Amino acid sequence: MPKISVVIPIYNTQSFLARCLDSVLAQTCSDWECILVNDGSTDGSASICEAYCRRDSRFLLKNQSNQGSAAARNNGMALARGEYLLFLDSD
Image (cartoon, rainbow, N blue to C red; front, side, top):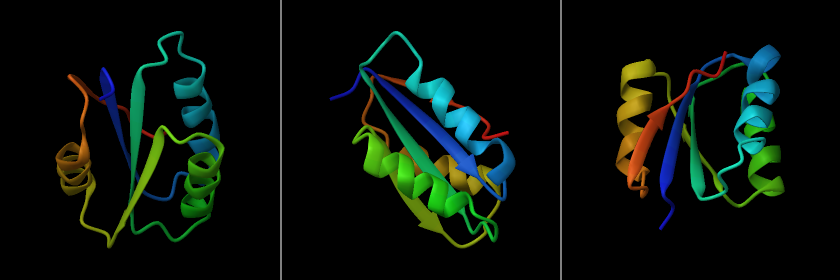
């Protein structure tokens, strides 16, 4: 079980997403999972998420139809296994 679960709702933030995910990777704490909730993005956000999931197994991608950021956070929270929960905006 990871100590920290980071939930990131994502909707069309292709321009900012890699920088956001790199900031998660750069943390000194390594006991985390990062749940990426793609909320029906129509840009390249999903493919960026897939690349990070291939790169590091601590990233988990959930794709859903567009339901808004609150639903994305709730769906990510349902998947979280960590003792602590953190929400991070993708932009």
